[in-house]
Length: 291
Image: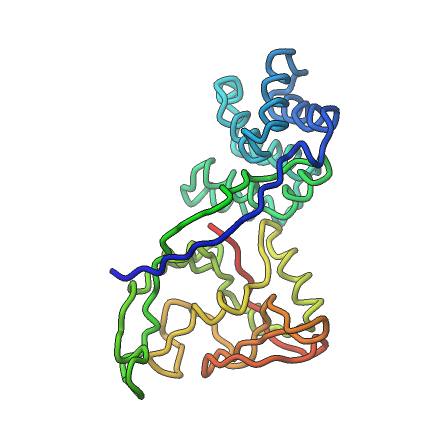
């Protein structure tokens, strides 16, 4: 098994830079009220507030602490009530019918509450809520991080020149699964979930494509980067049909990777080549989110 080792630097910004104690206490108090249905106690709110201020915990950690607490579990909420609580706690709103039905289908298919919770924790709406209170949604990484990244095989089996992909044919085999209820495909190597329905044949300008993905089923969806987009291509042949993705449109797809303020990278799904176009060009969209 081959690996690429990347060393990268991540700047650390603690929660306390952005928030004063009053903001953080208000953030914590929300979870007492919306999740536990009571006001905070002094020991509890001090513990969670201090944990946020000193960077020991982030917004997602606080949320998990409340949702998986013995006190909340003992409430024995129904799945419907659980979803209402998540919408109020993480999105500060009532559920919309489309989103509520989306998560209800997951419950009906046997998904756990932990799975559902992750969809809310890593959503844009929760990230924005955290920012309103000056809270970091997830923990900062260490200053220097070294991580092994597994490489996927491209699928190219014919070598056209020395030392190309067809020559080496190294990396991990594709590992995909399809959720027929949600009409998504999960890449278990990269951890990305891809939109896979007839809507990928719709075309948008970049601005409308970005808005479409951010509102797509409401939870954490976005435009893919150009690297993510070309990573799902099969390079065995130009014919992509019959593979792990069911819905294809042999045309151009938007990415979120810009060349400059007016031009953005696009991938052509027929030959897996990349181009760049002005942002008012009309192209297809395949949204993506993390698992």
